[in-house]
Length: 447
Image (cartoon, rainbow, N blue to C red; front, top):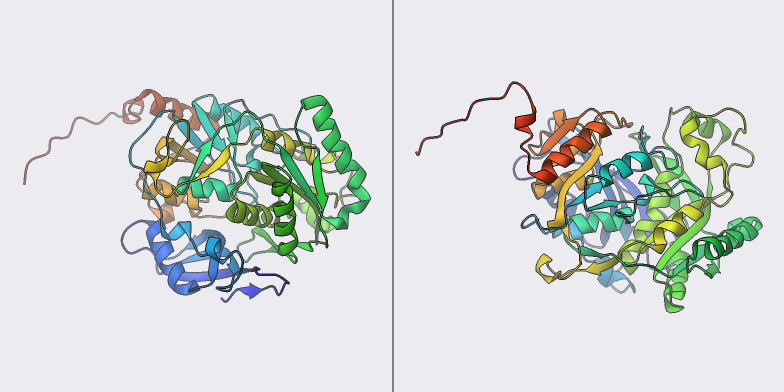
């Protein structure tokens, strides 16, 4: 199916596509996907987001968000480099012991499908590691962000490129955070300013810089054929202009708030009951992925209120409670970006030195068991990194290891069990020795 391209002003055009590609025949899933997707897209198209959302005997079904660009576009040089088509394989296991926790947005995760409800699981996993890399969806909760001290807050696109070996992570004490505001939400500008001032006055966060975009973003939710929350953004060039301005004014990380259109009362009620994913999650990722790719700075996003008329104030799912205690939902972003690691572009893994973390540090990747078609799981197979697949974190997808058949996947029932696996990996305890029956040693003979 061809992408539905959104006509916008400026050099970048983004659209969503469902692509059917030949299934893996040899090599890894990552290599097969990269080769097939590259042939299908051709030149002038960059896959900003992508995931295998189903697999049959003959084909893999891939959902992707595409950025189309012309050779003379101002961002063509950046968009012409596809990390997917040049993955760097992990070379060895390096200290410190690093774990990656992935809770995809827009797919209705049982843990992480609501504001911040995956944070306790994230902190549990962090307790087993020297460093845990997580993306905003795993810990953001309106005014709350309770991630542990050893959690690195890394936007999803940057996390993908970290795993692909194109980006290193450099932990820093503090970032100066700049903010862009969708002018559709001018009625809430006082709330945004109060959040910035409160963060400065109470948490000491350097976040006193913001700008209002020159035109409304036109952020609207959509649903994919697989039932995932995606979306469209009409005026991407306004975001790129604003980020350029904020960085020129000294910002080292960029957050944004915008009004998300298209969420109905019925839709939100169904989300509250756990029947469908959070409608706004997918389109927020499009905004931050684009910033990550173009500028290589820490970034995250929060929705300005769309709930005044559609959110019931009565009884609701306890996991969603954080969504009801804030107007701009933005303080969690400020807390995350204030201490997010700097992104270090790498021409090769050998370029990294000193305290820069790379995929060579990644000892395990934790994902829901039903979404093994996302890039983190595919990188795990490519680089022979253990992928701990948690069954308890159910999603709307059914891309399990029964379909993917990857040899590096360790399936567990819960995050409690996942933490035990990580402790064993950290301390060099054979997982086989912790299971029964224990098989006898196997003798091999020379050919």
